[in-house]
Image 1 (cartoon, helix red, strand yellow):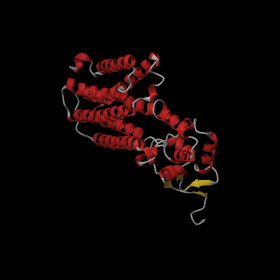
Image 2: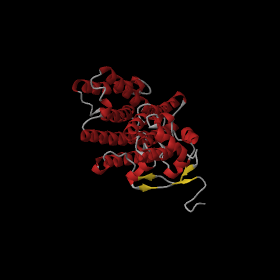
Image 3: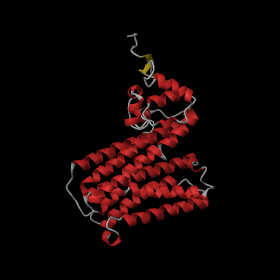
Image 4: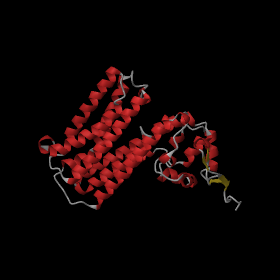
Length: 329
């Protein structure tokens, strides 16, 4: 069946994705109803994975496992995001798009590209007739996926619970996994999709290795386009004048989970080079507060971080002069 349509299901999955996203684009444009946007994206992954598995019909163990991983991820995320937006009432990302058909079309086109590209590893595995024995890459990939979805699901639930609590109104989320990274859900997302790619490696041959573009595209998207940059800008505008937030931001990794005391003591060049702390993530942060933190928290002045004070979360740490301990050194 796969050979009749196209040997790797690339054209088929592209057609299905464009059609599925176009359907929801029409719904959004005509009804000004954007509550199904994220649901349309995540469930599209499920459709492609199941469709390619069934059409190929070989039902190899690796194919079934990878398809199941995508189904679990897609249904969990899709249902969670749908229930959340129904609770919140509106998606603020679309405030400027609802009346602008061009911007709306660009968004849905980009979402279709995202779904098709990130699905490539599973699409190619399901389209392949090869079935090598299980290898270390399979196990490593499955472990990466398991850790990733655990972090993502935990982060989603912790933030939802935090925002639903009246006492946290006007505060930023810094509980649970959010203590160790400003975007744990994105870290989990990136990790699990790289895990799916790693688990697909035993099947790949020749040009099929180009499926690595899937996790690369996702990583670049979240780091530079629609993920972290937008949320950093929003948070900086809301909380940028609060000293506690500036301190949280300077001592909390943007993506890779790390203890605040470790991250806060790392030099700026290391954070930028290896931990994705890009300068444009702070372009909306009030400069006066940022300069103070750069001198005292990042260790380029006369202070280094032993700990920070975060009154909002009732977490207490302290900043000491460099070379001094609690007793004066």
